[in-house]
Length: 260
Image (cartoon, rainbow, N blue to C red):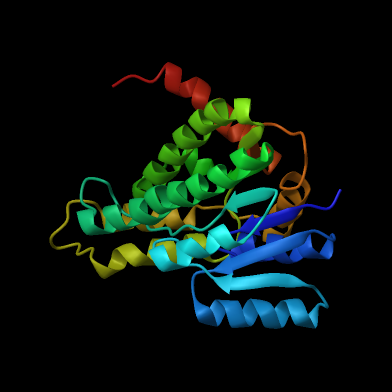
């Protein structure tokens, strides 16, 4: 069945791929991008592929941009927009930590509230939060991003219980590490403020963690998103790939026996 799907953060990466893929499947896609340049690029790509999509600029921290959401009718809202930045939690500058929460938690929840208000009036629909494996795991030097995604997990689980009686479903999609450039760019940001002569965290430890990250082909994750986003029934949490799901379940078991 064809759905109308609103997706934020569709200018790059998995969001962009999913938006194009969902449109190719015949769904009506309302794709938003943080920047006007991304909007232009996405519109050009959709045209080249012969796809019809509504595309507009939506910086989720901008109140004027947020007001545009009210103009659209949709069945499914995908809260995908996010930023990423790494660094040791014992030393990360608080302005950087707050910036991640502003986008990944506060602004994301605000978009979800706007979507919820529309869907509750309809008595049906679904909100999908693009979370992460980081919403379940805890990896050294990825703490700022991890904290925001843990918060998002709590938001999603709570909203699921609160909105069920109104006919609105809530779910999360939790990608593992995919090679979109998102992880690499975030790892680079900490070098703008980190100084090995001033900070106690060892540079070599952070570099070792970065180099040890195994990334997967993003096309596989995009296919999974195209499958799950429009589906009427699926698990509340979709972790992908299976290797990542297995890893996270094992980590959760280990935490119950963790000692200090």
